[in-house]
Amino acid sequence: MKAAIVGAGGQLGRALRREFPDAVALDRAALDVTDAAAVADHDWAGVDVVLNAAAWTAVDAAEDPANRAAVRAVNVDAVAFLAEAAERHGFALVHISSEYVFDGSHPGPIPEDLPPSPLSAYGRSKADGDARAAAIERHWLLRTTWLVGEGGNFVRTMAGLADRGISPSVVDDQIGRLTDARDLAAGIRHLVGTGAPYGTYNLTGAGEPGSWADVAAAVFTARGRSADDVTRVSTEEYFAGRTGIAPRPLNSVLDLAKLSATGWRTRPWRESLQEYLAGVR
Image 1 (cartoon, rainbow, N blue to C red):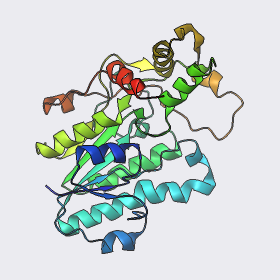
Image 2 (spheres, rainbow, N blue to C red; image 1 turned 135 degrees about the vertical axis):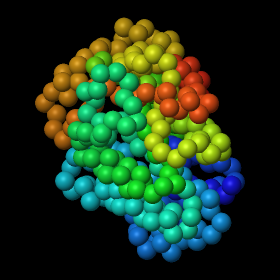
Image 3 (cartoon, one colour; image 1 turned 180 degrees about the vertical axis):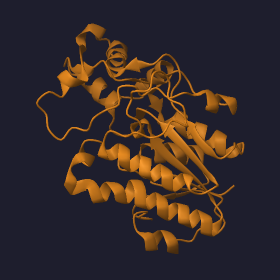
């Protein structure tokens, strides 16, 4: 199976390159997926599956009206261009989405078929991109949460604060699970490699959900600090007085039953976190 990875320079893109070592890796310099002509004119000959890891992920910056066109260009228009190319050239499309397409009010783990109800500009762009991907038959749409991989992310930030003796305040009312980019990439390889039915799948870390403050406390403990050095606050308290902040879903826990039925189980997030931290210096 010949694969192509778009957005190959990001956290997930780099993890996908390790899982699909023979794939054609396309960063933005190689293919600007927001350019309709560039996508249409690209040589897709022989490609069986395209893994779309390109995305605007700066949630708060997406609220700025000056960024709206750029957000939608990569999160919506680019998906439509790739879907059109998939139909024309006969390849399958893997597209990555987010729990931000939901408002976080669902009681319990969120199933794949819950109708979207985004709170933010970023969430709306992801929901609209999902609709473009789902419009073609041969697609796998993967929703994930709280991704950590190579590059800047929450876990690396907390590790740096712990190492420098800083004691942060972290929200304790947003609940979800971390997802190691390596686990997400491996799960994608499983779905593609086993020919799992097309459609939407939730793919996150497993285990008992926790808050961002729980994640921070786990990082601090791993770095030799006390979990009590993390001050727990509500989302409302944390963002009080700040402007340009995107509303966050409080429930980010996705139901993993459909994924498990394909024979794939991700690691508990606390286990993957410890392995991840071992590589953070």
